[in-house]
Image (cartoon, rainbow, N blue to C red):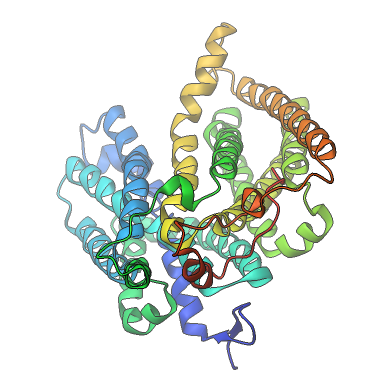
Amino acid sequence: MKGIKSGYGTATLPLWAVFNLYVIYICTSIPGLAISPIMGDLTKIFPGTSQLETQFLTLGPNIAAIPFVFLGGWIGTKFNNAKLLNWTCLFYGIGGACFFLAPNMITLIILSFLIGIAAGILSPLASAFIADMFGGKARTNQYGYTSATLNLVLMVSVVATGYLAKLNWRLPFLIYLLPFVPLFFAKGFAKYIKNPTSIRQNDAAKLNTPKVHYKFSKEVNMGMLVRYCIYYFFITLVIAAISLYIPFRYTSTTTAGDLTSVLFLGIMASGYTLAFCLRILKNKVAVVALAMIAIGFVLMVISDEAVIVGIGILVASYFYGIAQPYYYDRLSVASSRIALTLTLAWFASMDSIGNVVAPFVLDGIAKVFGTSCSAHPIMAFKICMYMSFIALAVVIVRQIIVRARRDEHKGVPTATTADSLAPMPAKGVAAHTANTNGATSTSSSDK
């Protein structure tokens, strides 16, 4: 087989390089995965384990990832991305190996924070590498495929780690050795990654200066970035309610487990059908995704029948899975390569933040109405349903306003850079960065 089309002319990528890319992407989401099957046995494994320690163990990777997503994104704008990838994977893999030696609960918590840090740094890098290696429709498809493959791997891993835990409680930690894999491909993979340090040096040489200074706000379409971050944060927050409160709503672990697996199934299915779905939705992704998420929560609210609730989860998660890779793809051409890792870091952080704050936001709203989401889990789904309809109304109103303004300015000449999805840096560097980027300029009117 010749390879996989990159979307850059007739160029193709070898299968091993794409496989390595997928492994890197998967590594961003596995922290905490090995802990799930042993949660119920922690008090037996480590007598005296408190509820607070258990919460730190499960939330630790997400909490640790948030600041380091930004740090990884910032470092990625200034240093060699290939070296950053290798050192992070080495740190990640060593941390994962240490789980096999952890003597107590405190050590497990510390190690969970450490691998969360590594996953946070890898998150914007993995998304940027997709944009480096693929272009056009191929890039759009790959954002969908990587998301789908990630959720497929998570589904299989949840089952596999559960069986491994029955043999020995430490065996699920094998999943944390996955970051060693990219180190085997490190030398060959580096040539497929665009290096911001080389871009900076070339730009400086063109201007005959020791160093070129870039301003982040000039390197990215800030309006798009802010809108997409708010949108992604919101849909992540409401979707997080499913995995948070389904176990409280259904006391049967089998039912709760089946319904939670539907969540992964929906996101997986959407990734593999992204191209087909986008051909139908075109520039209506924001409205349709929110509308279908709201309808999904309606189904979760109106019936207690597991089948109806499962259909609701499938609908909501499917369209969440459409929106997520779609906006990653949109942002990959909303930024110059110099600022790309930091741009994607802002967006990726919305996932961790949304998951962390979801229980606090939903419980806080429930308390206003004199109830609790834990005691009455259906309340969480009602809150998400109403919030989704309110957000849908906001998006529709904004689109109407934008469309009206566009109609008013029809025929009025405007500077082409105003609508560019790939804003160029300072004068004199623009041409070089545009060629390095491989980005295409399109309208920023989509929400």
